Length: 104
Image (cartoon, rainbow, N blue to C red; front, side, top):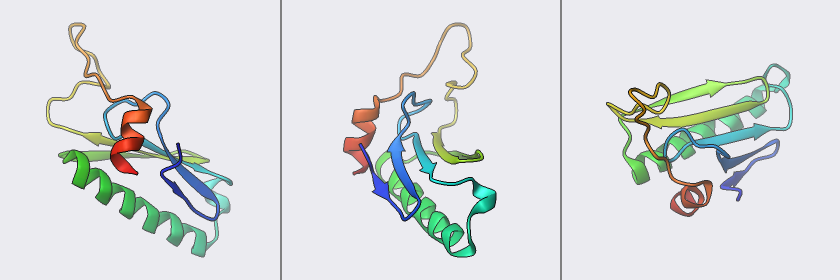
């Protein structure tokens, strides 16, 4: 379920989404090893996917997490509690297939 493919990355719905619309950029190399051109390509793709998530899900904000070989975009809403379940309550995100269908 690939949403976007770049020269050195693919964008997929997260395998274990924290919120609906959570996507992962899986990179072919570590971020510090990327050229200026590759960083531009990654930035442009990130802007495109955030715009699509905004259009489809209308979140109030985002967590954008940078890892050595991945970038994750997690849409956020006021009052969502997916990171810190409170009193046993937790939001129920969409499945990866549902996210793929919404964002493709």
